[in-house]
Image (tube, rainbow, N blue to C red; front, side, top):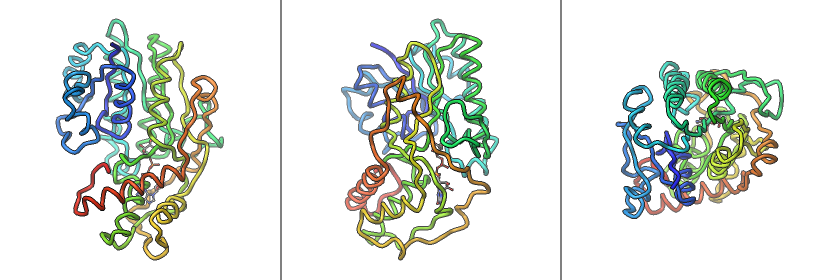
Amino acid sequence: MRRALITGITGQDGSYLTELLLDKGYQVHGIVRRTSTLGRSRLDHLYHDTTIYGQRLFLHYAELDDPTTFRRVLIKVAPDEIYHLAGQSHVGLSFEIPESTCDMTAMGTLRLLEMIRDLKPMPRFFHASSSEIFGTPTIVPQDEQTPCAPINPYGCAKAFATHMVGVYRRTFDLFACNGIMFNHESPRRGENFVTRKICRAAASIKLGLQNDLFLGDTTAQRDWGHARDYVRAMWLMLQQEKPEDFVLATGQLHSVQDVVEQAFATVGLDWRQYLKKDSRFLRPIEPQRLVGNASKAKCVLNWTHEVTFAELITEMTERELSFLAKNPRSEAQAA
Ligand code: GDD
């Protein structure tokens, strides 16, 4: 049975990847921070399944800023594949906490690479890189050759980690890959990301639980896909003969305004009555025209996204609606 280790297993991507790997017959090990609450998490359904948890799914407490503990887990698990998804992933927040963002996302990745270098045999390594490394790109759409030009602390940290993965691949012969992922969403997305915030608000307003939706820049555009499609590509990347970097994207740009219109149309409401601008959600600087060219992934991995933008936002809004209808007083949690 192949063994996979996932950092960031309790996140959106970690939970979908866990399901995918369990389906493929892997034994899955996840790293969780001591502060993580497993109750009501995205892994709840697996955690409470006694045929899975403790049999084929195992969780270990460790932190990337505590390399000794982390190394101990690595030695014990001896994974064939490592999927490194952990890190502070909110761009807006990275302006408020730049040092801890860089420590977790940039230095955390380097520490992990250093630990892997000492393992024999070295496991295959996937790093969740981001379109934010491109910032204000001169090339549209962006591909694997597009130069890094990050414009926020999060993008800088990801650019550092992405380059380090390349360094370790070339220098130490590590099977290490960067998945340069454009925005990917789902009903399991964190509530402080814009798609989930909008879909939840549309459902909540429909049910009379909320009056308004406050947003920052609604003209901002992104290349939005479904997270389930993206974790499939992560696995494919580690099954190839040679390690390479791949852009994972849909190739289609949509604005925040498009998300609003799709979500409110799903619940049959006129968004004009509810949308309010709020400068608290504006960022000091916005990346420009981040849209990916995933032709290499299509050609080498035979990967392409399956879920369209409209299907994604409709699914997210419908899930919020059915969840909130059953749990009107619920706190933020995965729908
Ligand atoms: N979060 C948020 N909240 N964003 C808002 C809001 C708001 O109220 N109003 C407008 N926006 C705009 C942001 O300014 C940004 O331009 C866009 O909506 C998307 O914001 P997020 O959903 O927070 O995502 P992101 O693009 O900054 O970053 C995500 O995608 C990256 C690329 O895959 C994150 O998942 C990153 O971790 C990831 O690397």
